[in-house]
Every structure is written in C-alpha cells, then in structure tokens.
Length: 289
Image 1 (cartoon, rainbow, N blue to C red):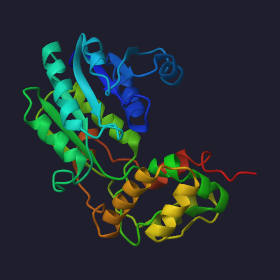
Image 2 (image 1 turned 90 degrees about the vertical axis):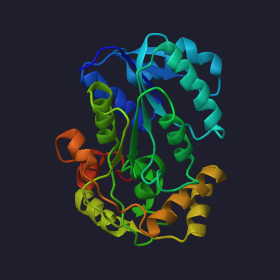
Image 3 (image 1 turned 60 degrees about the horizontal axis):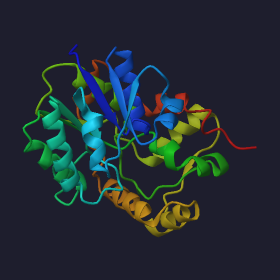
C-alpha cells in the first residue's frame, strides 16, 4: 500500500462515506473534505481527519490540500461551471504535490458529449496529475435515497424506466473499488466502467424485493409526467426531477443495461447483488405503522 494522506470530497454522501469506510478498513490515512466538520464527525466518527473544504470557495482549496497525496473527487450537482472550478482546483493540487486524482463519473460519460461529467473527464485527462476515472452505473442505494416513502407506504417502486434493464451497483462496492485504485499502484490514467453482474428490469427488481421482504412490492412503471408529479409532491426540486427523468429515459432505451467485468476484477470477488442489497436494507424499507 502506498503512503500519504487521501482527501475524500463528498465524504458524507452515500458514495463518499463508503469510500471513507473502505479506506479506513484498508488502513489508509483519510482526510474528509467537508463544509461542516462537526456535522461530518457526528456521522463518520473520529477514526479520520477533517478539513474545511467548499468547492464553491477556492480560498479553501490550498489549506485543504496541504499534505495531501491523493484525492477522491466528486462533482457536486450545484456546480454549473465545473470546468473553471476544476481547473482552479487542479492548479492548487499540482502546487500541493498531489500525485493522483480519482474521479467519480458515470457510466457512458465518455460516449455522451453533453453529459457534464464528460467535460470534467477531459480536463482531468489534460492535467499533469495522474488520474483514474470510475464510471459506475445506477446505484442500488438510489432506492433508499429517493424512493423509500412510496415503498414503505404503498409497496411501490415508482420510476419511469419502462422495461429497460439496469445493471445495478451497490455504493459499498464502489467505495471498495475506489479504495483499491487509491491505495494500489497501476491504476493511473485508466478508466473503469463499474456495473453489477446482472441487468434487471424494475419489474424483476420488484420481484426480488417481494421475495426478500416477504410482502408484495410492485413496479408501477409511471409515465415521466406522472413520475414528475410524484417527486415534486415529495418536495424534490424541479431541476433535480428533470435530471432524474433524463437518466431514466436513458434506462428505457437500454442505456443502463451494459455489464462489464471491471468491478469484479478490481474487487477480486463478485459484486453485491440486488438480493444482497434488499436483505441488508430490509429494515430501512419496513412498512410504516
């Protein structure tokens, strides 16, 4: 394992927290880059270090990067001009002596010119700092992040994915894969498309949840307009809902079905299945009342 501190941005998110956990289990020195240190410490604990970091405030870059060897970087949705922000951040990282940036992109970003992650990838690939790009598919944890309420109340998975298939991936496996490329040599200037090992429709996903949880779970297969109404009624911002509709449209037309061997090759084992996820999160989705 290489030495040197690893800065994790987005450390309190579903992927970032998994990266932190996997790095700690690997014995790596982790520094969480967060806006609110006290809040982050209450979530992540005292086994790692913390620095104040706000990607919208370049004055936080240099202090956060002091003594940092490698960075796990995520693109916050709030950033519109990521090219400018990333150029500034990479200049500060180069000055600080950072030796690797691992970027969390999305599956297919290299093939979709208008995808905002693609512009980030291009900037990284033109940088003098060695980079590694992770392109995961749909997270299993999207279900517990955004669809818990209807599953608990109605036993309903409500996403406008049609009969398109999804090669679901568990964020815990993404975290472990990120820890591998951050702590092992040989991953510089490489990109990995990370997927699960089976592509499922949401009808099949509902059947798996039904079997694991022991109660009926249905996939309602709403239209994009109906889905939009449901999500807006739950308080999600319009721009975010529109983004989700775009992602599920890509699923409808087969854009999320691709399966690769990159994840099992990195992990040295089979990735978690949707059945594994459903079993581990069963209490989270338990009916209310």
